[in-house]
Length: 163
Picture 1 (cartoon, helix red, strand yellow):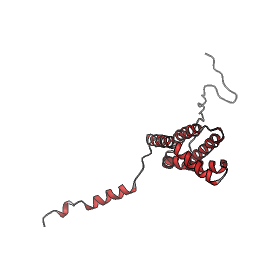
Picture 2 (cartoon, one colour):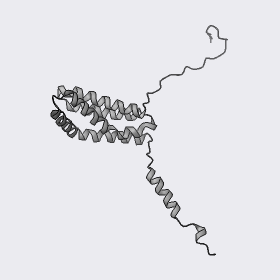
Picture 3 (cartoon, helix red, strand yellow):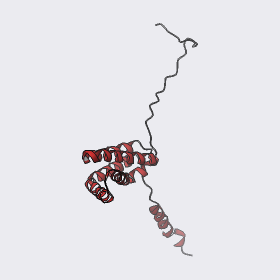
C-alpha cells in the first residue's frame, strides 16, 4: 500500500474530516410572518390580472407548510396564529393597488376572503399541525394559575388532626 502525504504534513498523520456546512435555514417568528405575508401578497398580485384565484390560494397553503417547517421552535407560536392575518393583510394591500376605486377594493377584499376561506382553513390547519408535530406546546397561563389555586384550597393533613 502506498501512502501519500500533502506538503507540510508529516507521514502517518490523518487529516480531520471536513465538516459539511449544510445548515438548514431557520426563520424567526417575525421573519416567517413576513415571508408568509410576502408570498400571499405576490400570489394575489399575480392572480389579479390573470384571474387564477386558485394560484394565490395554492401559494398560500404551500407557504404555510414551508414556513412552519423552517421556523425555529421558539417562533412557532407566531406562525400558528398569523396565516389568516397575513393573507388578509396581503389581500387588502393587493386590492388597494389593483382596484380602480375604494368601493371596488372593499368588494374585492370581501370576495377574495370569502372565496379563499377553505384554503385559509387548510393553510392554518396545516401550520398548526406541523407546529404541534415539531414540539410547540403552548403554555396557557390561566391553567397554571388555576392549578396553583386548586393546590392552595386543598385541605392539608395538619388541619384535620385532632388537637
